[in-house]
Length: 52
Length: 275
Image 1: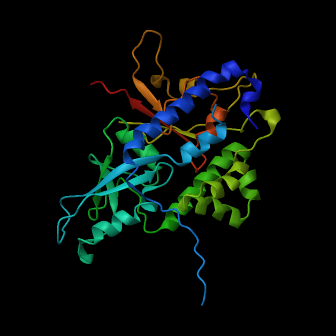
Image 2 (image 1 turned 180 degrees about the horizontal axis):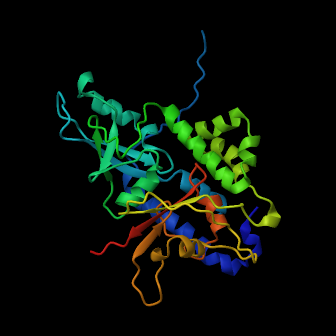
Image 3 (image 1 turned 90 degrees about the vertical axis):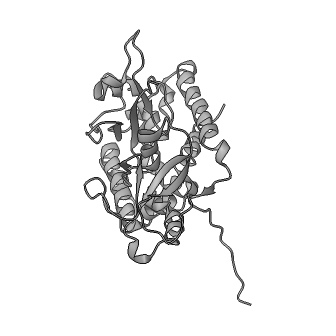
C-alpha cells in the first residue's frame, strides 16, 4: 500500500528523488571513509559443529 | 530509479563512525586507548557498546567501575533516544568520527535513566512500539500479535537483523486503503538547545477535506519557527536520519519509510550553523 497512488509521478518525483540522493550522500559522508571501523553488532553466522 | 524498499534498508543500515574516549578523571591502571566503532543509527547506546565497556574495563580495577554512561561535549547522552537522534541533535554539524566520552562514575541521575540490563531497553522499545500502534491503529495490530511476534521485533533490532524485524514490522505499517493512512502519525520533534524534551501531539496524515498532509503541514502546526518565510534566511535544519526531506514530502510516506524501529518518526530541528 502506498500513499503515492493519489499523486502523479511528476508530483512525487522531486521529494522522493531528493530523499534517495540525500541518503546516498549520507552514506558517503558517514561511511565511505570509515569502512575499516569495527561494527558494533557483529553479524553472527550459525556454524553447525559435528559431534564426532 | 531506486525502490522505496531501498529506503528501509538505507535507514536500517545507517552507521555513525564513533570514537570513544575514557573520561580523564577515571582511575586507571594504565593508559586507556580510544575505541572506534560504527554505531547503528537506529539502535540504543547500551545495546551496542559491550565492546566499549570491555575495552575500558581492561585498564580499570573492578572497584573503580560503576554504571557506564556517555557524554558529548558536556551533555550526558540519553540512552533511551535512538543513537541517530542523539547524533543529529547534538553533533550533526561536527567533524566525524563522533567523539563520545565514556564515564564509569558520578552517574548523572538528574539527566539519565539507569540502564542495568538489556531487558530495560527491551521494555522501553516495546512500550514505544505499543504507543505508536495506539496512535496508528488504536493498538489493534500490536494486540493481535503474539508474544513471540513481539520478541521477533526486539530480537531483530538487538541482533541487527533487517529481514527478521521487517517480516513483523510490516504489519504495523499497514492501513485501510480507503483511509489513506494511519489514524495519527507517531512523531516526536526534538529541539536542540531547548529545555523542552520534545513535541508530541495528535496529527493526522490526511486533512478532513481529504488532502495529504506533508512534513511542512506538520511543522507549520507544531513548530512554525522551523519554517522559513519568503526572503528569510533559513534558521533551522529539519533532520530525519541525518537528511533534510523536502517540506512537500507526504507525512504518511515518511512515517512508513523513515520511522525508527520503535515506529516513531523522530524529527530534529537544529539551528543552522552561523560560522
